[in-house]
Image (cartoon, rainbow, N blue to C red; front, side, top):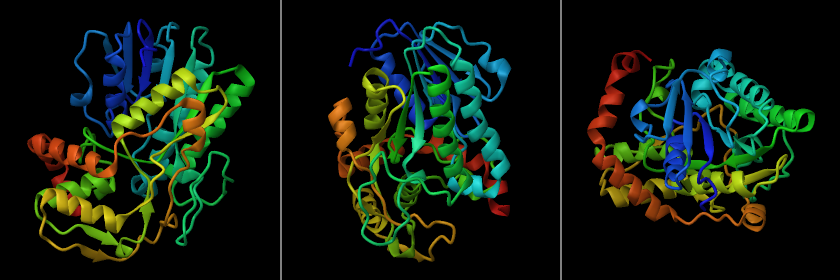
Length: 348
């Protein structure tokens, strides 16, 4: 893209899975500086790129003292920090508010006073606006109606972020672009990353890294509700390119889906992972999650392709192979992160 050359970039949540991949993509364009804010609650410092242009600030974006360490010379900002994820937010809604909803307000309020900011991109959640259905899913467009009934505090907090972003855009002219994520996967998502957050989901995170780890260890993949649910899986390198497109070409005050546009059932996902990882063990049929009413969903890519020229390039099979290869190469590091939580995990 070459739009970040000689720019100063802020990535809030830059030690995370998505943020660290984004940082590497931007660093390839020779920016003047990449400032990363992260409190390492659900991420690892090892993810932060080792590069002379990178400045790491260890702390929460909800802390005014951390935000006041920023200089008003930022060209582009990406707000990716959140409390990962649905299950942890259900277990501790107050922690979700403190580490998800509140940082949204703090970051937008602080950056709304910056005079040189060209664009700030906020990572919203496609699940917050997707139709709750187990019937045939339709691609969720950006202008989908928003329900007031949500499955988790995480979903609520991500939607609150959109509301605050729109307020500061209208009230203060904050040049905010909203990027609605689908289900992201790829190298760099570490099981057990960060600190214990009260539930087993500190270790067992999103479905793809969980399935890959179990498949590589020849364990049964837990298939809830027969794997009937479906999701839109998008590779992390594509998400990074999409975020950069939002920053360079997105219209302030507008929202864009970052999606593959492909609906994949969890049963199909499990079969693909077992095939690539050569796992001979049959899946383990589990009951449905009682809190999750978002059965089938995927995102529309029409607007993003037309207005940003962005389209996901990595098909699921290719992306899974690259992710499985990365997991194999980093098994010791991942196992060490998981082992930190083992005593608490056994009691959870």
